[in-house]
Amino acid sequence: MHLSRRVRIVSLVCWCALVVIVSAVPVQSGAPVSAGLFGLGLDKVVHFGAYAVTAFLAGVALRARDVRGLALAVVVAVVLGSGVELMQAALPTRTFSLGDAAANTIGAVCGAAAYRLVSRRLDDS
Image (cartoon, rainbow, N blue to C red; front, side, top):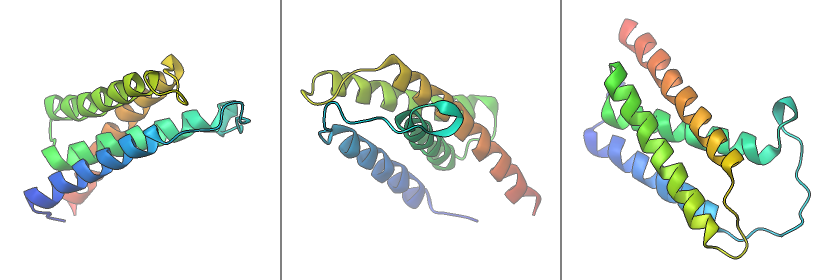
């Protein structure tokens, strides 16, 4: 699958914008936290998934083929996640969370790894 450079970059930028917008939406304080996978709060599962997708798309945009490219994809996702957490600290209905930052980082690493696995399979076919 060959996507133009523009499509790869625009896809990543649009996804990042969506993540920032959704992260700024006010939430109800005191709302119950639903249980997610492995007993983690559903919010941690969402954070994991959002930043896994971010790192995956960064890998696509960068056409990451080596450790350096994959690391850069992770850095892109972690920087976005850190920025969002800092933004949320300044919002009255949101909070900064180290747990969310950890879920973002773990998701970013897994997303880059998933990108590497998928890109290898596509290269082999």
